Length: 189
Image (cartoon, rainbow, N blue to C red; front, top):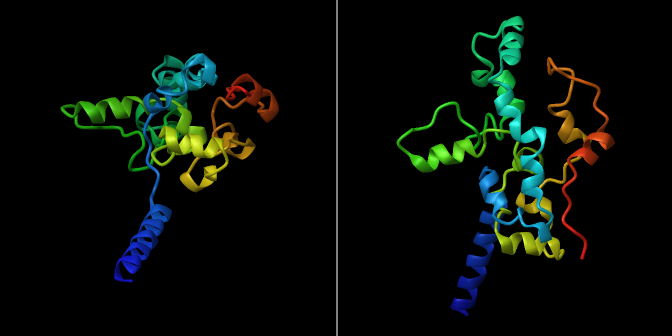
């Protein structure tokens, strides 16, 4: 009886802990491990060829610097939160992109560099809770609800978080057209 109660208590506590777990950003390199194979849809390669993978680099251009100056920003675009919120992954979050990291901590530097663009998690949510193959397989097989582990299915509202009139370079945004340009589905079996 006592061991059964112990098991129930452990399961209850682990269930509560799992529900309270906060997803953290892991960076595109973690996604690449599984999502770069052609037979799985080569999503990483498609992202790497897209404009999303180059968003941070845009902040380093003379055009971006001129826009920042015209907007009255006190710093360069690559240092301005107003720009970073849409040009990196996880801006403003503890596990997201940071302006400074300890340069002697190679892991922190690599992790930060993996967040230096509009990466997978910018659209799909922080990945620490769904990055493992077993969790992704459980989602694919319908055993786990994607949202329960932080996996987001991007929709128009997600895109409009950045593709809107606040952007000084905003262009008309037609969700269906833009979604088709960046489509990267998992192949049907």
